[in-house]
Structures are given as structure tokens and as C-alpha cells.
Length: 110
Length: 116
Image 1 (cartoon, each protein chain N blue to C red):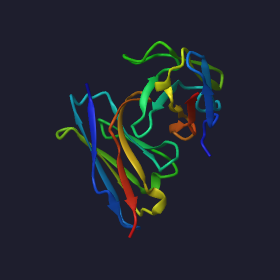
Image 2 (cartoon, rainbow over the protein chains, first blue to last red):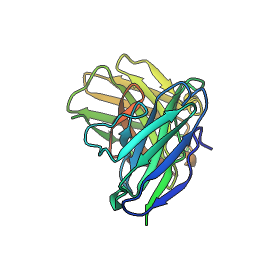
Image 3 (cartoon, rainbow over the protein chains, first blue to last red):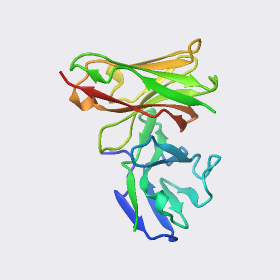
């Protein structure tokens, strides 16, 4: 049981916009920034969004993040086949004094 | 660009101690946190803990009693020790760097199997 809650799956067709939600509490998302990771099959996770809505260099602007209260969202616009991956949200948790992850959302491009 | 590489035994016997090292190349930036994350096959990511370049640590409460992390800046390495392992500790172990809480650079991961 993950501290942060994500839907286990999401899907969309090429060109579509998809959003993935991440729900937490006041001790994690509510009081700290959210980071998102993309894990392509058989590879290490890659930082996709940091500090709620910032993109590291090289990440396409099709990916965007937002946060409101104790929830966060990752949006992917102009969906492409190469976006098919597992997506994880994460945040610092003040009660646990550590990083907590969501359970991951498997994105399928139909 | 920072690059990280995990190394250590791929097979550990139950009740023994798992030991992994992460070697950093491309610069050892002093303001980084150096983290360990693991992922059992087919499952999600679990944060194990982190060590700052000063040596201060934060551990996952569920693993805290068994985890020790350290850093050797002279060798550009940091390490993980997990004691009293069981089959539940079988996973791919990743090392990663972090500024604040964002894990920006990751190693490729190393599979550690706990089995007699």
C-alpha cells in the first residue's frame, strides 16, 4: 500500500491528452513539492517533472505538472507511442521523514 | 553530466548483509543527496534512504533498523548495507543523486537476489 495514490492504469490514443493523478496528504504533497518519474520498460526511472511543474532539460513541453492542495497531476499532451511507460509521483513526507512514492500508473498508448 | 553505476554481489544468502556501492563519475557535487531506491520485480519503487555528502542520513522507517549508508568523497562513492536480508529484499537496487528531493540522475540498477 503506497502512501501516495495513483490510478494503476491510464490510456489514450496518439495525439490525445492524458492526465495522471496523485493523491496524498498534508504531510507529503500538501506541504512539499511533487516530482514525477517516467520508467520505460526495462530501464531505470527518469526524472520528468520536479518541484511540481518544472521540466528538466531535454523533457518535451508536452509533459506538464500541477499541484493543488494534497493532490498533483501529470498531463501529457500530443500523446506519442514512445510515451508508453510507467509513471510515478513522489514527494517528501514530513511524518515519515523520507521520500514516498505513488504505486505507479501504467500508461498504454492505444 | 553525472553518471552513476551500482556494483556488488547479485546473490546474497538469507540472514546475511547486502552490500552495494555506487560509483559517481562526471563530478561529485558536494551539495547532493545520494540515494538508494529499490524495485521488486513487477512492483513499484521503494525509497530506501539517502546520505548527504556530510554523512548525515535519512532512512525509510520500515527499513531503518537494518540499513546503513555512507559516503566516501575521496573515492566518489557511496554505499548501502542492508542486514538480515530475506527473500522480500530481492529487488533491483538503484542509486541516484538528488538536489533537494528530486532524484535527477539514476544508475542503471542492479538485481540482487536473496536465496540460499
